[in-house]
Length: 308
Image (tube, rainbow, N blue to C red; front, side, top):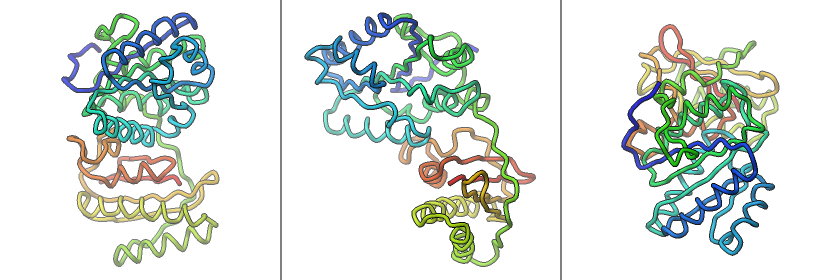
């Protein structure tokens, strides 16, 4: 589905390479060009590719900020927040644009429909406000054909074609909806009384977590996230109507529901606070604190399932 690309500050390119020579021959000059143009270059690479790039760049290696991809790619919401914070900091300190090359660790190479493919689509909207160019690296010897197909659906530009527009790029909302994995089932959750005030609900939820042996830090994170979602239900969904919680596959899960008009934005909670498209911080906070957040259409309203 070809489309006209949005006029954003972000430039999001894909580079699917097939040999080590392809990788080095294109990425080392790209980083050097960033230095020549007084940009701030960042490389998020595996350990082996960092070693390869050290040899290729020589003395220029120390001018590039290298980050470990295992630490950068933990969960999509955390990764978006990390990029947003880092780029904002660099721009504020150096008054320059930022040039990034990045690869996911092999352990995160997603199967078809996994959350990291949806992340690539969400990236186009969530970080559109940043003055940054990003080249996402995919080794065709490692990733599957289904992953490569998703890469071309989620990147507006093709690095291998001298930055030409990618004709297979799809609207981010459409791609994110199609690629987001289905919500995991959560059988056996126990109802929590939502009567009374918000404080009473939090006390009941906290007591249940303590009863299930959830560590204190997890209790605090879940209480913050659940409170943010409950507040959203109060503001936008005619109030919290029901809640359930319990252990599922070793994780504590809390599910809260409202009877509002519903939430059909696949990118809800991914826009950094303060960006033009961020409607509020509740879902953003929940996604930062939780292992996973599922948003499900209810009848009527919305159910948000929080996985600790």
